[in-house]
Length: 360
Image (cartoon, rainbow, N blue to C red; front, side):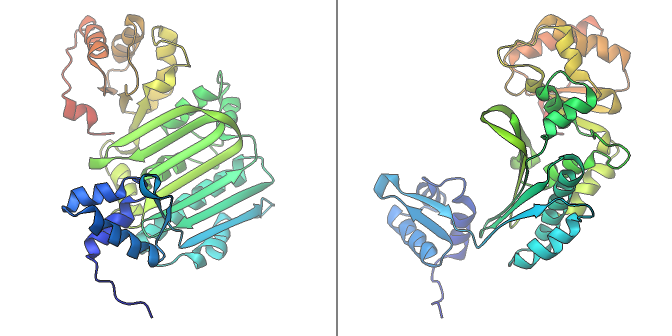
């Protein structure tokens, strides 16, 4: 029988919940937060390792710490006729889950069944691979197929120029290649329930990561290696305070609700391009007339041209006066360009920074 730990449970919990983010610096981060010596923190780390909750590799300055998987599950599923995503969850995954709150289990069930159902209905793959990892601090769920790939599928369905434009459309929400059987809500809600949500497909990567104050970091980039099919990865903290109902209520009961979209402007340009033309602006604005509020996120964009700004902030706004367009995270040069376009339409730049960021 293991001896009761004499360590401060708050410090142990802090280490276990932050070691994933700071594998090389967790000792320094903990020492600074709690005013402890490195020697004292090293004692915590040794005891936690002896308890089987973290692994330690390397020595001295090369030492690294990582959470140890308490549950590690990998299996393959043949995507045959009549397969039910609920049955895969109920009989293959749920019995392996240990010691996490019911609200976290419910979030994992929702995310897994939504993504696995997409694989069954859309991937054109014969097989899917499932991974479930659970450590003290996090649960990670992955669904992988070897089919057509989600961005290629969307490109084909909507006759888009290339998979990158498909990624842009997917990020806006309310997009489905099979409207008779799907609403397009699955990825929208799943990506907001988890701390981290990522899709790898073809040569593209898309992620949505929860930040402090319920802010979000949305990122898209080109992959060095081609991913055949679609790889969806979802991660959530085992002490996340929200539930599936909280997420549903936030968007469905809000007066704006599910009629709001967040558009990462960086996805509107191809590598080596500058955002200068009206056609690029129209690409960014495709389908946003389905929403009542549009948050244009300029994170990662250094500059835009006057025609691009004019198309969005004068031409489109004049044609759609009932749609609220908010520019967020724009640098000074872009803000000046937006201001000029708005002034040309008789509107001043009135949004405060708080207003710009409140819906991210």
